[in-house]
Length: 252
Image (cartoon, rainbow, N blue to C red; front, side, top):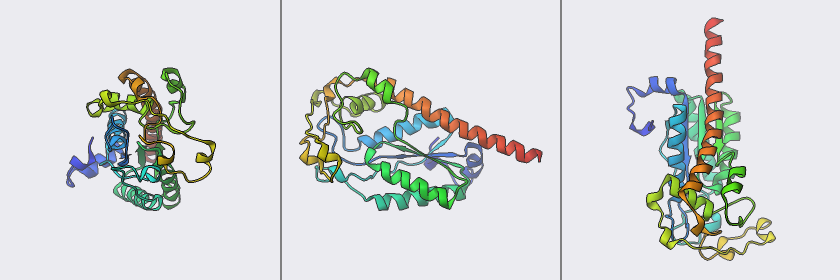
């Protein structure tokens, strides 16, 4: 259910009913020749919609800008600082709690946001400890990704516009993918890149970190659905705990 489509006269009762708000968070950055600049926004928003449908939660408007320091010099990339993201996310979470929400779920489509999301959750843990905060970036997908992957991962931690992320897009937003332009990227990632600030133009000219030509919708579906299972289980378990608490309070 889209929060922005509600009206002020009716939304309060629905907040009491649903309790959970999901915020899709993405970025605007280069994703090679075959994917749009807003890839991370599309992935986050459509994943959030699927999670909301499974858990009876509200979906907030997508937060479309992220920390893209590594790709900030590529055409089309728009970068904001971790500090700005942390303050914004913490303020959003606190406002949601004041409105009556008890669960704030951040669905992240861009790995570069991870530090800010984790720190914002810690800030909220101190400010409003009664608010349960999740920060998700495709949890539970390590094993299934290894099973469906045909190419070697370019890096042990992140992937970008490659076989895997392109497969995500083919499943969640395939109308924005042009596979006729997909390429086999050849990043030059050294051990030093993990130990010192390294703009990505030093390791790739395309922003494609792997072989995007191997992407398929079926691979994306298998990975995304596995992650949805994991996220939904956590969110529903928290909702049940809230309901049990309400029941206990009503019998005291």
